[in-house]
Length: 281
Image 1 (tube, helix red, strand yellow):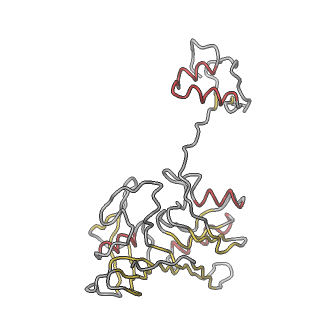
Image 2 (cartoon, one colour):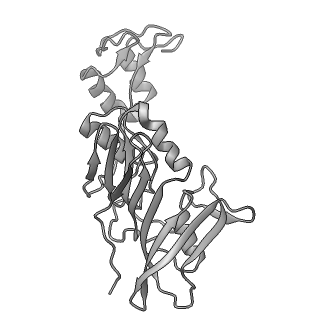
Image 3 (cartoon, one colour):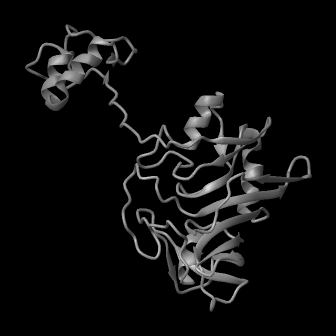
């Protein structure tokens, strides 16, 4: 609260300071959602005490609900593995906080220590692995950091008969913190992808992608750099906006499988998506 004020009550002061939220402020006080430093709810008659701490929490924004189910592929004491749908964010970010996979799963399974071992773009579907306990988190995350995990992706894009495949694409990628897109720049490569053509119908091709590294947007940018951008990609080669509730054209990219040698059991583990892409037409 201020050093001095012409208002006798906390509510009067708040309504004057936030006039556009006057109705909601009165509701919050009535619902006992405005409290002092000791957590004691305030009433409409609570006097304003200079320099006293008052806690008023803003309403969270209304987030879009991604209308696709999260399929559980595996669960044990250490790992929770899901088949992430397109459009679902992995972690809280931007407009997706409570509706991110991490928060949804923490709440559904009462797993407050759940943490992603790696990440998938919001627009990418497929295998996504979370660690359940803090004690094992680092060991599994280090598998991805040390690049000893085998990841296989499927992608649908334009078919180019002149594109020589299979091939390995290497480039230097950078993505600035506030930039929406990544870029390829001159310099020592830090991103590597092995690509194969699995099938085609003379118009579109089904590509199998094996990323050696895990840079943000790596597969999308590498496909675009070859002249065959992934279908449904609104970032590469050109950026264009898509409404947040438009689910009509999902990015045709799926993390088909993830495999590795478990750091605790030393046994090979393989997790596979049930999602399948199809060639148009």
